[in-house]
Every structure is written in structure tokens, then in C-alpha cells.
Image 1 (cartoon, helix red, strand yellow):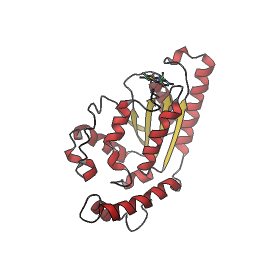
Image 2 (cartoon, rainbow, N blue to C red):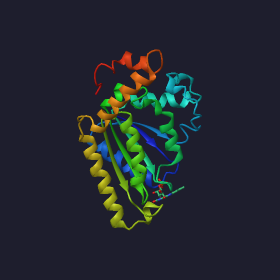
Image 3 (cartoon, rainbow, N blue to C red):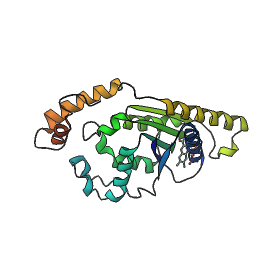
Image 4 (cartoon, rainbow, N blue to C red):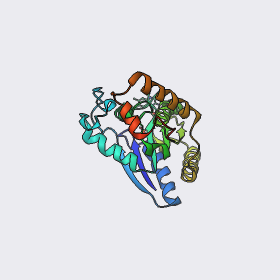
Length: 231
Ligand SMILES: Cc1cc2nc3c(=O)[nH]c(=O)nc-3n(C[C@H](O)[C@H](O)[C@H](O)COP(=O)(O)O)c2cc1C
């Protein structure tokens, strides 16, 4: 199984440790090939907001040299892992948000990729407010049409894993290993109702408000997305 892993923080701390436990357990389940990306090293520049990708000219993105290998790894992978600590304003680190900004052309009303409709993703977060970091990441992945999105928030109250009582360390390690086993076994399911709903809204928008002769109308036509639900 090919897995693309996105580390949302350069700090090799709690989240990195949790992600490695998860990856270690996956490796015990079968044959895995992990392609890892570290934010911000592997995508060091911010999205400039040029909107070229939203107009179908991804190759002209000022940061295409970073985005292209990331997109290729995503499309190639069977599964994706997004790992991030929870940061203050109820969200994820800016470096991870920057990754999602650069990939926003994947959302259903623009140029969703058929490959993504087949995939599963897992989000790992650490920090006492983990749920707040999971929420926007999960929503984004569902907007890409991802078939299944799972998450585990490690609600730890310290920035040092080893400072947690032994009992807690064991509890979180067990939860990570159990989640990895379940993630490994998870089969493709029927699409989320929210995805179906969003697809129909997107189809309406692209047909009525984008219109023939404009991007992404042609993209949708070429892919046959107007004719039938692609997932
Ligand atoms: C800028 C910043 C903001 C943070 N904000 C929060 C927060 O609002 N709530 C929280 O629970 N932890 C917060 N934390 C703590 C981290 O989320 C937590 O310690 C996490 O486990 C660190 O993961 P890491 O070791 O992978 O960096 C913050 C950390 C940083 C650096």
C-alpha cells in the first residue's frame, strides 16, 4: 500500500512521535511504502493567491516546483496521512494550512480528481484542543471528494510526550495502534451524503455560473462529471 504522509510541523515532537507509532503499526499489517513530506520544508512559500490553479493552469503556479511532486504523490497513493498539532486559533499550523491552500483546486466545484474519490485519509492531531484542528482538515478532505476520512486527536496537555504519566503514554500508543489497524482494514464505502450533496451543488454552479467556454466547465465536461456522479 502506498501512503503519502504530510507532517504539518517541523518540530519532531508529539505529533511526529504519534505519527511514527501509527506508521509503525501500519507496517506490521502489510507491505507499505511511505512518501513523507515535511511542512514547511517541502512547501516553503505561501500561496500567493494568484488563482492560476483555479483557472486550470497549475503548471504556472509560482510554487509549482513544490506542488507538483506533492500532487503526484497524492494521486499515486492508496491512502493519505495528515499529521498536525493543534494551534491556538482553533485550527492547524499555518504550514499545513498553506498545503491545503495550494491544493484548493481539488475541491468539488473546481477540478476534483477521480483518483481521490477512491482514497482514504487519516488525520492525527495532538494538543488539548485537537478536535478544533481536525474539523477544518476533515472538511477540506471531504470537499476533495475523499471516500473516507478518519481522525484521532491525542488530547495531551504537554508539549513533551515523555512528560506524560506512563499510563497515559501507553493509553495513547494503544489508541494509535488500534486506529492504524482499523485504518488498514477500512474498505471503500459509499460516498458521504455531504459529498453527494456538495457534488450536486457544484454541478449546478459550474453549469449555470461558470458556463461553457470558461474553466472549469470544460474540465467537468471532459471528465464526464456533468453526466453522472463520478463516485
Ligand atoms: C503556536 C502554538 C500554539 C498552540 N496552541 C495550542 C492550543 O491552543 N491548544 C492546545 O491544546 N495546544 C496548543 N499548543 C500546543 C501544541 O498543540 C501541543 O503541545 C502539541 O502536542 C505539540 O505538538 P508537536 O510536539 O508535534 O509540535 C500550541 C503550540 C504552539 C507552538
